[in-house]
Length: 204
Image (cartoon, rainbow, N blue to C red; front, top):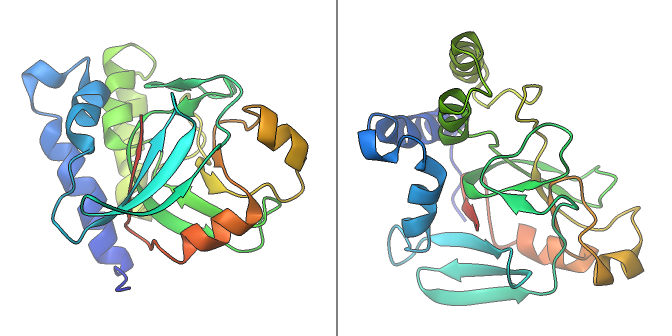
């Protein structure tokens, strides 16, 4: 599977959401607007991931063809919401990109997502969660570092991971994470072999 350079990846994640920010009708509902069309593959060979909160399942697709399905999965103990605040324990809904792999995680393997995205930052500004200074600082940090800041009012460190040091029995019965999406250790290993840096992940 081909990988993206850091420079190309940064351009990818910054360019597409920023183009959406100028759409007047999407202002307050930008996340929901994205989700309304996120289930459509970008092209017939796109490998992408769908996380379905309602059905507690994770599906990997190539185009419209299913490659793998994991169920049940665990999400944040605070539920899944379009907007997540730091410390809420909620899983953010939206359209994300994989931006890192941590093979030394307490959760066996951690696949990081680019949360909070520019779309989440825009909604945070519109809803008064971010000040204009917060918003400007968000983009300044993103441009300098190639990934979003993780210590804002929206929180961070969101990704897909295994159970690791957690309790497998709790995983089977409850949503237990602090906002991430958890599968079993064997499933996260399988998932990591199917996706790469830049893979699109939809949480709805």
